[in-house]
Image: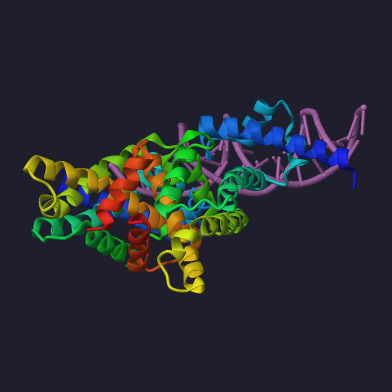
Length: 196
Length: 196
DNA sequence: ACCTGAACACCGTTCAAGT
DNA sequence: ACCTGAACACCGTTCAAGT
């Protein structure tokens, strides 16, 4: 394995992805052309196509990179054995999301893209499966306190992961369409409504 | 005002929109070209551009038509004076959504499009403002039972509308990305998580 | 007024040729 | 092996010409 060459390749891919993200945040998915990324990166069309087989694969690379960073942080908390109620997990996820990373607007655009790009959808769902695992680990102690058996606790934690994801997606979509909102406020208002 | 001509124009616009929706459901927003809509509708390129000034305006027309139908149904319930806890309002909204109309996948694609098309976003937010009004009307009796003054009740109902919308958006986005799910199950699981 | 369809500028992708 | 950039097929949009 040519380690140095692989490292170089990866660095080049990241360089292209970073230029692409700058274009995406500026103009959106629909309005950033390969020509824009060429201009932003200072490379040529062919150079980009020698690192990514097409525009969709570049999008997939960006999404994967992004999700994996989020994931590592979450898994660290899960592994540390912190006992967190799901509501707190949700709030800290949303807080971290609001702080940095991709804008909600861009995330929603990627969801839309995934509806039409089967590979991007697969990328998102497989990485999300890992995310679900991490969420389930984080909420397992809470699930134990609400169920009789260990099996039931594991099942509840697993089911809760999907709902946690749905609640986070709701925050992202709502925030993208109707403007920013405080995570804690969203969580509190949603809890109040659902307890009715 | 030439009533007959207006009716004809509207019918023609609807005819084009219906052909476009068939293409959109089949291939997604990204992969339906004007040429596809031309073929599906049996009209010519120029004919379509004589009814819509561009592809984005056609998208706006479709979204507007769709939201207004949903809205009329909701406002009817609100006006009928039914006393519904927000959780029931949410569940019946999601049930109606799952039954017919645009697929969640297409809705998510339109959100993505709105991130990049300011006019489409405006169309969505202004129609959503009417939706919020209808939701607030529907939840006002519930809000009264939880607050001291009429002003506080109105404020709570108004705030609840945005959260209701966020919860519905979460269901739509989650369902689009991870596959169908029973509305009642989603609502129950979300409630359980948030009460933790 | 509504419609036709060729023409135009621009898009994503390819590929022969360079280093 | 990585890169260049002209070339290609196709896209959204326009517009002179028809009815």
